[in-house]
Structures are given as structure tokens and as C-alpha cells.
Length: 148
Image (cartoon, rainbow, N blue to C red; front, side, top):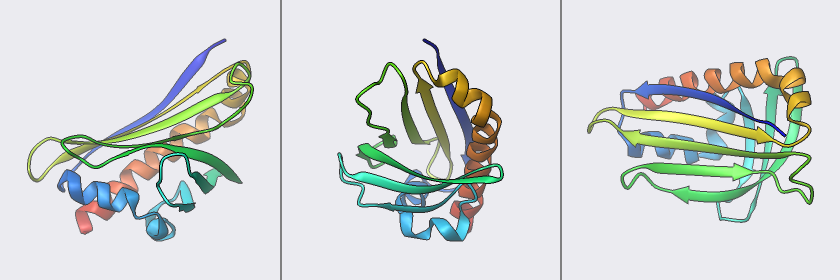
């Protein structure tokens, strides 16, 4: 059973704290995030994350669960993933990191790892849209944080 990671990365001219604040202000996502236009979550570990995700022409509502919320001290991490009784069939985890480069610059990285027997189906149906969506979100986060 394979595993595939969908990844996007961007350097942002803003502090890691500023970028992490934008990333964790979930209620503001509709105003800037083209990939995930709505997120309802408390960011408490174990709590659900209800998202509206745009995959090309398709919009899905998805529920994942918070696994980690660590402010940038020094590296910020925001992680969530699916819960399933059959991880051999499908598993997914998204890890977003904010890494300081200097006081005024940081690097945002998002990696969504999908595995299990259904991974090739996900790649075939949604792989391109996932790549495009994560890159669009990273660029929109850069623009939002640099304007903050």
C-alpha cells in the first residue's frame, strides 16, 4: 500500500508569529483562502475540524480531527487528519509548519500525506486538484500575512 505526500512551501516576509496567527484564525479563511473556504474548529487536540474544501470544480465538506497545535516557539505546527477504523484502506494527515528564517521572514510548509489501499484512487481523482489547492493556499497565506 502506497503513500503520497502533497506539499507546498512558500517564504513569507512576516514573522512566524504573524503567519501562525493568520493560519489559526479559522473564521477569517473565507476572506483569503481559495482552497479551504470555511473551517469550523476549536483547535483543541482531538476536536473535529469541519472544512469546505475546493478540489477543482468539486466542493467537499470534510471532517478531520486536530492532532497538534504548537505556536512558533520556535517552529509552529498545526496538524489534523482523518479518523478511520480502517487505516489500511485510507489514512490522511496534514501537517502545516511555520519556521522562522529571521525576525522578518519565515517559511510556511504544508504536507498532506495520504496512504492506504485507496490512495491511488485519491491520486487519480484529486491529485492535481490537491497540488493546485495547497499551492494556491500557500500563496494566499503569503499575501494575507504580508498585508497584515
